[in-house]
Image 1: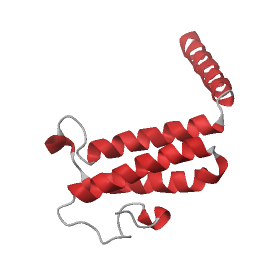
Image 2: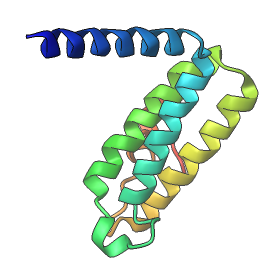
Image 3: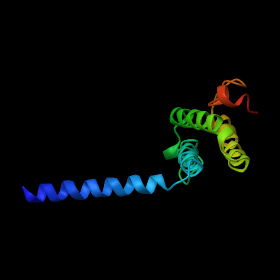
Image 4: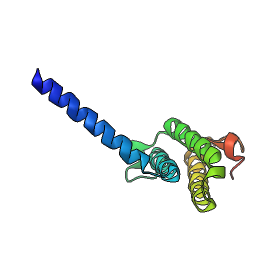
Length: 121
């Protein structure tokens, strides 16, 4: 019984520490970190990794790119232009890579995330 209590207390302490750690992180860092994770996953799914034949999944890439476009578009007014510009550049590169990897490319303006970013060509 005491082991369970000690484990619960340790978990609560870890959770409290994580909360304190998050509280010290600026919003722009959390936003850019989330964007980088989305970009990395989308790049792999677009076939831009070491083993594209085994990792390409354009359906998954579409979802990731659309989520990234929504995040970047929504956050851009609130983060510094320096951050927004680099995120937009990465997003555009992924949108173009997706178009290039597609056997039947989407119409201009219909690609992943283009409802948020506008047409990419």
